[in-house]
Amino acid sequence: MPVVDVHTHVYPPKYMDLLRSRTAVPYVRSFPDNPAAGDRLVILPAEDTESTSRGRPIGSEYFDIKQKLAFMDQHGIDISVISLANPWLDWLPAESAAATAREINDDVERMCAEHEGRLYAFGTLPLSAPAEEVVAEIERLASIKHMRGVIIGTSGLGSGLDDPKLDPIFAALEKHDQLIFLHPHYGLPTSVFGPRASDYGHVLPLALGFPLETTIAVTRMLLSGVWDRFQSLNVLIAHSGGTLPFLAGRIESCIAHDGHLKSQGAFEGRRSVWDILKRNIYLDAVIYADVGLKAAIEASGADRVMFGTDHPFFPPLGEGEKEWLSVKMNSDAVRSALADDRSAADAVMGGNAVRILKLDR
Ligand code: 5CU
Image 1: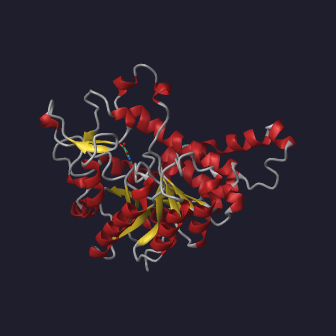
Image 2: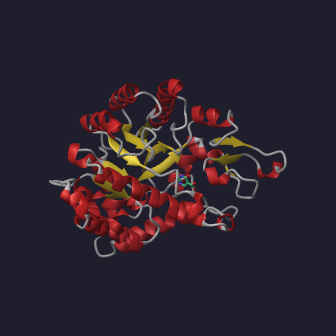
Image 3: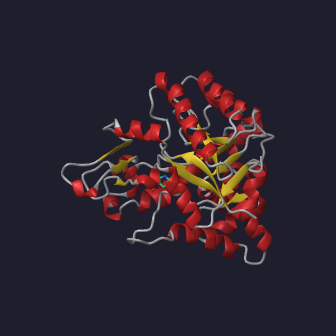
């Protein structure tokens, strides 16, 4: 059974050129007051401050596809489904977004074609462009050999994934059987982390801000009836669903106990969160411990959970360390959560991805 990584990112050369041409977030540059720090990747608003946490080092592992393949070889990963890393194209002006998406998707497709059998991809969408241009790119992606869906963030067209203006886009994705890989970027407002947040590096925004952002976005989709209107729309949620598997019962209970909404018939005939988790949602296994992974498996089923690494984020901090602790934590979690079911563990490590993403074609 092959090992497949469904959560692994790249900034293709065209995207790197864009990042290097900018001085506002997102950008890549070195700082004259600290030349030893080399190039820094600054993508999160909270990173753009005069402190040691300004961005993080960026090396060729972020954009050189040979490094991705070396990482795969090092960690026994047979196939990777690569995706553009955040913040995607959300920040581009409407006029240039569609052309840039085409260039970047073509760049990624070329990488996959040059490494036949080892790389597939999720495409990127020009979400700041008019909806017709987004739909046109979905249709184009559906005919590109190695594309297996699209990666998007939680902002949608700017006001979230419960925006009815997204309906033509969801309809096109459903029609062309394109999976959405939903990934966080924006986190929570920094004020929730308090006045000493900067003492804690990137821990609060990444450990809590990202998963809560995802959970809120998916819950807004549920509440707005996206999956009642698009019953075959499939979404792979990053980081094992944020906290969705853990909170699904509470979400259901809050819906069932909202007297005002009930009196308005707001949720009449709606599908339950549990049903959607088992029929429309896939979860990656990027949760770093068996407790969270067991919740994901319990919520969606071991046949809907897929291994990932989040490479090139979370590299080892020790010089010369070859094995990535972040990868080991995720693969150990699969082995431990499914210790009694070897075939389910193999499925999570790769078999599910081959079947769900049709990686044998
Ligand atoms: O460390 C991070 O900020 C990130 C990120 O931005 N995107 C991602 O996929 N993983 C970690």
